[in-house]
Length: 207
Image (cartoon, rainbow, N blue to C red; front, side, top):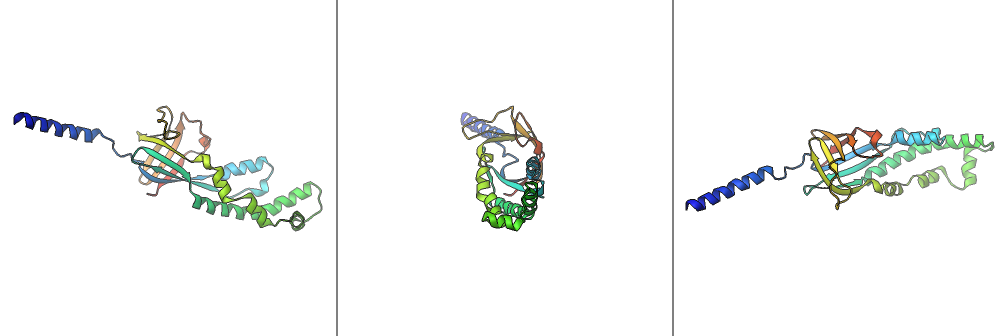
């Protein structure tokens, strides 16, 4: 009887120890939304192309992060937010394009009004803008920004693998802080990130 009790006690202690060191839920667990303002990047490119007439006030790309209990994550473009952002971009382009076309005509020595230019082109201003800025096409072009993989979050460091078949790299991570439902990515270590100049980035918990 004593032996049985001893074994039962040992088993209970073992279960308790395993429960204590078993996977504590990550503090980043759940769904998050990341909004990246891209207007400075776009305006710099427009300026470099001598298209200052088309400078924009705001254009944000919204990404949805989902950190799952099984240690995997998904990242994708929020298509609804993208549609709204593109609508705003189109509105700004409709205001800026006439001035840009007028300047181009003057610089080329073409004696033609903006209205005459569009009439001769066989396309309206709205049609040109719709052709240049299509929400679905822009979302598809950002496809590489999404993905999935494995993750770890500990000691203020967020590790993300590129793909489910790859492990996280212990030398490559993002530093972050948490304040309630707000996560701030402060910077990247060991990452050759094209977004290096966009830190800090703020994610908001949405689920």
